[in-house]
Image (cartoon, rainbow, N blue to C red):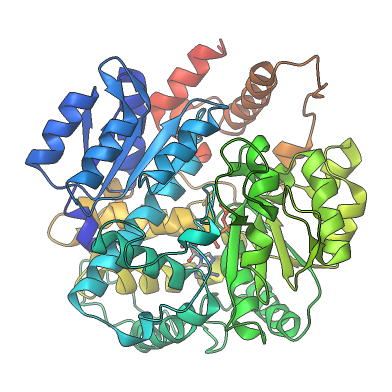
Length: 552
Ligand SMILES: Nc1ncnc2c1ncn2[C@@H]1O[C@H](COP(=O)(O)OP(=O)(O)OP(=O)(O)O)[C@@H](O)[C@H]1O
């Protein structure tokens, strides 16, 4: 639970009512308070009058640009992270926003998952920053790490070589401190001692002692298996034990690992665990969301560029590979790499060398590659969307993260653990709520379980979670995984062919969306409320999408 930041609302700035509504609903679902502003001037006024945990602003509005909102925050030294939402293909604006201090950017069309992850990481960072500010920890004050923060689910923009953070780099000491913290979070060096330290304490509290209630969730739950050396991965079921065993084994070698599993099953946690257990642990762990990088920026993001190599290249810049040198490069959503980039990546991995744009020389890099996607890569290879040679190069060993519904025996203990971890003692739960949680299907896996509990605690009266507070479909679902429409199966079956130069991207995406909506409707016997829940969207968003795509 993001305790500190939840005290402050998120400000959404957009001139379109629909977008404001959609964002508001999504953020509220995450348990955040939200305020909206329909233009630049109102946003500035609100920012002057109130404090916010995060600002998300559109770029083009009738009374001005989102850049003005960013500038307002920066020039008034507000310690509020701000992210901008840019039109598709408008990378220049995004870069400009990042330059003047935006924390991050999203390109339209935004997926709800992207939005959720952006907000979560931003707010989490803000929380850690606030905590850190309140109680300085000497272990997080290592200023010697060279790599710039790389933020998951967003375009991670390495800094120009010349502006690796210095005292003046962020123009504001608060932001400078936060940049350092981000940096720590993305490197084994900063992360290791803190993570194992905090999890150790957490583990000591895991044995549930929640006070008795109408029904105490902790009765007879036993202890949740957690190995001290892989503290990020909880669970005692056979599949998770197997995943932990493989993580340990893989840490000893340098082989490329491909992590498969549905969204929210802990693929990134597994990648970080391999890194932290390896001899590279004191070197950077760079996480890149391949699906979030605009195609035209990809080469420069991965390999860097030399000053003057193209318009706007006003300084030398390192890419992800150089930043990860000596450490681990985690390629998340690797299936989303365009084919042209797949060729360049394959070459870099094979040659263990990269050439910056505008540079005549190749430079050797020592990087361990871990990749992941929730899509079925083999099917993508079959359909020609993913290169077979790269697939074999990345997929030397596969690590499969199990979906939560297959870890049923762990569920009760995980619920207790998460409640205790995020909300301390004193939270109680009715029998009906417990039953609903134990019979829910969790299409969004761990991440969804965490969100449900966060929201339930926020909604609970008298510290007691009741079934309504869960806001889930508590009709028992068919948990038989053979009948559950796995995301990868949906993605793999019957996708329309994309013919470059002929198919319009929006038509293609509409077809995919239509197929998924129809499958969800069939699965829930045409109950739109349940279908929305299965897909992790609000009812309103479901209705909007059905209308837009003319699905009866
Ligand atoms: N086995 C686990 N034990 C404890 N927490 C877990 C476990 N698996 C996942 N989580 C938690 O679930 C959330 C999602 O994990 P993570 O980002 O690693 O998933 P992912 O598979 O990489 O998701 P995506 O495919 O959407 O990127 C995190 O908060 C993580 O801590």
